[in-house]
Image 1 (cartoon, one colour):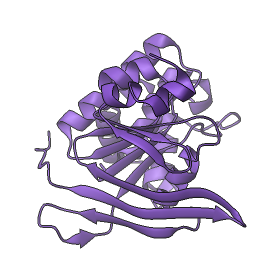
Image 2: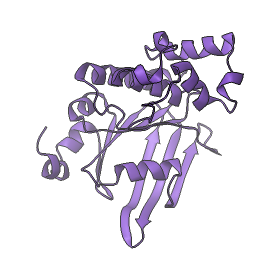
Image 3: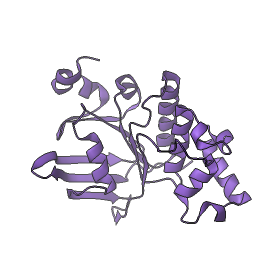
Length: 239
């Protein structure tokens, strides 16, 4: 268990994204503190995935993204990422093979060792997935795959964990387990979490901060504050 310092912060300042003449994101400013679950919500086309790609450095943008540690010095941020889906439909690889391929620069056949196997199995255990280590990745259920993807994204533990609607298509029990796991991650490890989600019931229950996005930030704050705002009600009604 890592002691949470409460002072580390990812500062997202004045992020703007344009595709040609079309402004997609405008003047995005967010401070993401360690040990907190920050949920981004918005209608389709609001720019949620675009913002995540900007943070990940996958698309051109203006503005800055800076990580500050407890001494307030700027460091290169370590980011873990779980996408909406993983293209593994035809993969014959095992969970062990996939975890190795994502977490090592060496070919999988070169990192097969008892020590590496046990390290990965122990890490999977935190996500209730240690028994899956030898299973074919394409045989996993949606909930099982989601747990494996979380394990990959947190090996090693990042400063910032980004989750882009990773539980689409997962049943209610799987969703509940996902949010419990996320809650445990933020409590037990010194990392911040950004999650894109449409599960308002779970967001209300588990989020520390909610950000309503529609090309720019319309409102942000505690879940109850955002859900009661006129901007939210105009788009989604009362929840």
